[in-house]
Structures are given as structure tokens and as C-alpha cells.
Length: 238
Length: 373
Ligand code: SF4
Image 1 (cartoon, chains in turn blue, cyan):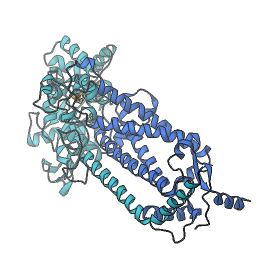
Image 2 (tube, helix red, strand yellow):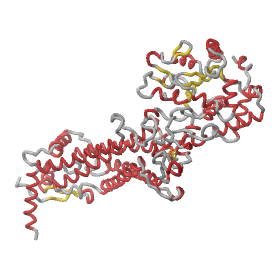
Image 3 (cartoon, protein in one colour):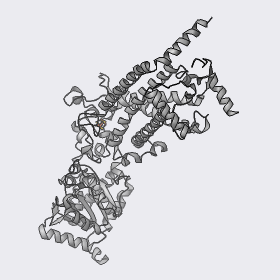
Image 4 (tube, chains in turn brown, yellow):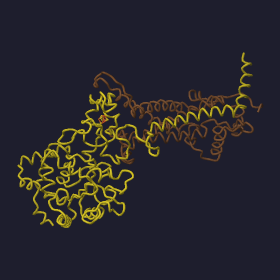
């Protein structure tokens, strides 16, 4: 163990489009959840002003709808990038699709989630891009986003003349009416809140325990990898 | 058959025979065109159709229902609608309104079914119980299911009146002891117009019937089989309290100051935002009022399974499978709390379990720190 150097190298992992997607998504989800909860249960704001001079609830809904569009097109853009970007951005990253992936998944489950210690610490097992459990959680988030997009635009379709929301007009009748659709939309919001708690906690956890720049990587794009690791990979590649 | 039909009066003839004037007739036509949302040029078209087409025989069945649909219909704005279309001219069979009863009534129905096979319109009020072989609703010694199948076989089209016939209404709410079933789940080979509502607005019913008889075809229907002219908009989108909604001014309780001021009823459970109907524009009882105008939230009577869709006087909906008291937000908050707690637990456990790894890093980090110039 003592033989491992502490000589870390900066590796470019997250390309700008990935980082941009991430932060736009953060803003969109936070805004949507906040405005959505207000729509679901508006606070009692007492005001002496005439209704004609007030429009805060309308504006709140307006922000919700705009954020929904941003979230949707941001997601489409990320899907596009999963074909264009580097290997860490590739769509294959999001599923443990081969033996190595499954092995990595089990490794993360054992040592990060269930907190077992390796007999001999092996830095080669450090994961550079998404760790597989995190990747699965992102796939789940993706599904949650799809649910919100379908139910949300489904409810919105009747207010719109644009073709895009109209694409989802069939959703409420498919789900047995607006009431059910609204309920599903409402419950799924909590999925995002729970995801955010877990996601932020684990990002901090990795940064704290491993010290490889987990959190700053989403700003700058770089993670830190031990020098030896690079050599080995280079040799392997040769 | 044509010869038989030719002997039939046209709508116009029967209206005049019943003592109405031509002016009454034209007023009625204009009313109907307005209900259906047509431009003025179609008034002539409707008037013409009613003058030339022989009356369409109608069989009106009653199964598991409360007759509120019929009640609503006979109170439509214009007397001709109820009087002529249903009461005197067209209705060959309806057990609540017809003069005949018992065997005579059944005979009249049979005669219509045979004489106008493939021609008549079948109107159904009420759901059909399928449980226990349908014994929960029997008419003239037959179950509702047998009656419906028999009547539907020769019908040109079926109009499912009200929430009972179009989605089951209260008798099909959980646990649905009689297995009450809406019409479209039983009859699948006929065009069906669903006109939900508990009851539907009388003018809407008249509009649907007049459309069918005047144009000889079904009105344009939406995905759920409802006439678009009346069910394309949410109550919320035509509600006169909508400005209060957008301004965020809500009734908090039914007896508060805001209720007196007529603010939006959203927070006391109004289902206007999820309900498709024309109440906001047509209103009820000759345009006098409608629930929201009377200070009570819309409770979504024209939506599928509205009885099972959570509390009437609350915004938040119960989460299925979590007991009566658990609404979505309570469940969500508890889940988020549990997850946050688990994260804290995980952090503490990490600190203990990974202490060697952490210590090593801290030691080497401090060593390096000493080397910093
Ligand atoms: S009272 Fe009901 S339908 Fe009217 S604006 Fe408020 S929520 Fe919408």
C-alpha cells in the first residue's frame, strides 16, 4: 500500500456539454419541484390588492411550464450527446451491460454502499466516469423525467396550440383522466427530491473519502487519477 | 321500409302539429346551433334537416341509475327540446316518461326494434351490473345485460347518458359490489357517444340528440368518445373565478372572508382544473348558476371514476395503498426523511468502516503539507 504514490494526474472526464446539461438540469428540476409543490398546495397569501393587479400564481405556473420545456429539451440534447460525446458520456455507461460492468456494480455495492473494506486496497478499482450504481440511479432519474414529461405535457396539452405538447394529449385519457395523471405527476416529484438527497450526499461522500475531485469535476471537468493507473492503461493499450 | 318511413311525420311537421309556431321552431333551431357551437349559416341547415327528415325513433333505456339524466333533459332551456324531441315525437320507449306501462310498454319497444332495425338510436341511462349474472337490475323479467344486448343489436348508434352509462358512476366505485359496468365495455361493435356528467347538462344532451337527427351522423368525438363541442375544455378554463386563481387568491375554508368575496375554490378541493365539461359556459337550470357560482367547488362528476379519485374537499390526493390519512406529500416527506436519515447513518458508518483508508490519507496529506514551501 505504501508503494502507491500520491502523484495524481488531471484527467478530462466530463466534457462541457455534459457539465452544461448537469447544471441546467439541476436548475430545471429545482425550479420545477418548487413551483410544482406550490401549484399543488398554494400558500395562503393574503393581500388587499385587487385581483386584477395580481398574477403571482399565474406567473408561478408560467415558470413551471418554461422550466418543463427547458428540462425536456435539455434531456433530448443529453441523449444526443450520449452518441456524440466521449466514452464517459456514452449511453452504454448507464447500464451494466457486460461482465466487467456487472463486476464493477457488485464492487461498488459491496464497498461503497455496504461499506465493506477491501482486503488489499486496489486503486485500479477506482472508477473514473460514472460509477455503475450511480449510473443506474441516473437511468432511474431518466425514467422519472420521462414520466414527468409525459404526464406534465399531457395535462398541459389542452392549453397549448403548439404541436409539441399536443404529442402528449393522449396521456390523460390513457391513464384514466386528468385526476389520475395529476396524482402520478405529483407523486413522481417526490422521486426527484429523494434522488437529489441521495445524489448530493454520495457526491460529497466520494469527494470526502476518495479526494479525487468528485464535486469539482462537475464544474471543471477534471478528475484525478493516480499516475500508475495511467501507465498501466497505456501499457495495456500498447 | 321506406314506405313505412315516408308515412312518418318529419320533425317540423310534428312540431307544428303540437301547436308550436314556425317562429318557435326557428328559435329552437337557433338555440340548438348555438349550443353546438355552429356558425349562423348552419341554422338553416339544421332547420332544413328537421323539415325533411322523418323522425328518428329513439329507445331510451334505464338501468342502474337515479333518472337525474332524464330530469336534467326535461329541464332544457327551450321547451321544444324536451317536449318535441323526447316527450311527444321521438321517444318510442322510455319507462319513466311514456304513458304505456308493463306489457304494453315492452310491446312498443319490441315493435320499434323490429320495424326500425338498424335505424333507431339507443339511449342508455345507467350502468349494467354484471355481478351475480346481473340479477341486481332486472326489467320486465330480463336482466339489464340481456335488455341492453337485445336493444343494441339493431341500434344505429348508442348514446350513453351520464356518468353511469359512460363510466359507471357511484355504483361502480370501489368495491363495486354489483360489478356495475359502463356501456362501452359491454357493447363494442356500435358507435357510442359518451355524455358523462352526473347528470349531464340538459342543453348538452339536447345538442347531442339534435346533432344526430339533423346531420344523420355522430358529432365529432374526442379520444374518450365524448362530443368535442361540449367536453373539449376544462371547467377551470371557462370558470369566472379564474382571475382569482391566477392572482393566487383562494378560499381557505368555506366560511372564511375569502369565500364571501368569491375567491377561487382550488384549495377547498375544486376539481375544475381536471374536469372537462361546459358548466362554466352553459351553466345549469336555464343558465341560472353552476356549482362554482353557488360557492361549491366542482367535484369532477364528468370524469372517469370520480368517486374514487380522492377527497372532494381537499386538493391533495390520497396515495393508493397507504391508508386513508396518507396523502402524497405526507408519504413523500416521510420517505425523504428516511432517506436523509439513511444518508447520515451511512456517513457515520463510513467514518467507522473506512477509518483506515481515511487515516492513511490524512497522514500522507499532512506529510505532504509539511513539504510545502
Ligand atoms: S373555482 Fe375551480 S374551476 Fe374555478 S378557477 Fe378556481 S379551481 Fe378553477
